[in-house]
Length: 140
Image 1: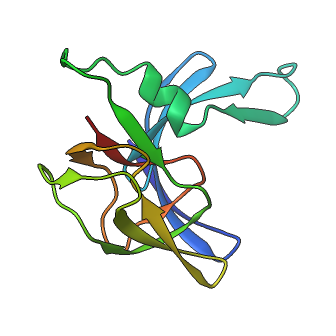
Image 2 (image 1 turned 120 degrees about the horizontal axis):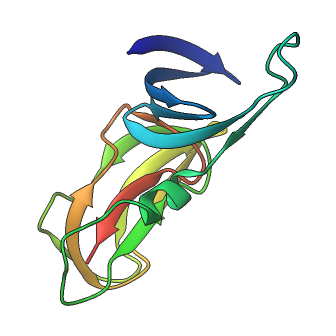
């Protein structure tokens, strides 16, 4: 496994390449898994393009235990840093309730529940840098 620290637009990301199989690389960015498709040009040229599937697309491919209801993934609307996590696993939340605070572009943004339900999983912690579309919380 190769690990890198990248700074993109002033935000730091911990990137780990966990597996490369032909033209598909499995990477983790701040703990969020991505499948990256590498466009392979002619052998004499360097790699010219990389296509990244957004976290929401990766999440759809992960099998989860069957549940009686549907699950809602609350994703990051912008790249930024998690300043505060207001809820914990197992909490019951109502639509519109504040779940997290995300600092993006020098502003604090409240991340709110889009549905009533119970917190199944918290995917980002205080201090984590997240990308746009990264899953933050799963409500069931």
